[in-house]
Image (cartoon, rainbow, N blue to C red; front, side):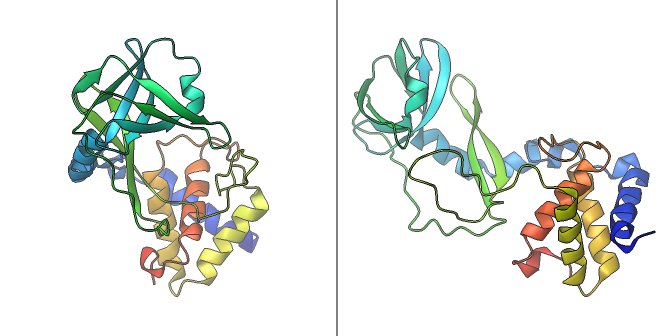
Length: 243
């Protein structure tokens, strides 16, 4: 077998042949109750500092509170189709809200509700957040409570063009050559090749039930591809990889 195919073949075998009871339990996935419970302090901040913007009774978009007196930032393009604007902050609903300003270039809108004691968000002093850092965002909501979605920073800081457009910072369709190069790089930079192979297999097991838009077509190898991509992106943080 060609050397470039040995590592992917071993990883696929490890993933395919591992017993089903080794798969990640639902409670410990990023949407599982155990993981979400770890972020309850952040959920409470989101509860106080975020807003849900409605079109009548239907949720339209999220926003963020920036002043105690009711100023809220949100996505401008989502407001254009709203016919009956209303806002909920924490557990209080404001039946009336005004659009004060819109910046189409940055797709940002400033709206205002009649309030005097809201809790504004505190912005971080820097945007230099390292890859692998946990982040949370607004998820689905009940009538009175926010739920969070947890994830990690996976793309490096990049310049967003002033002309607008997508700037994800990651490639959605790596080709076979790039995946092979990433896998070889992981092995080359590790002092324990076998342990790195097992680590790739373990990460692939964690990703087995995820959706893999934009990766190569073979459904069996998709979790392996994602594992190789994630671990190679984390190479500049040695504590995330086996020695």
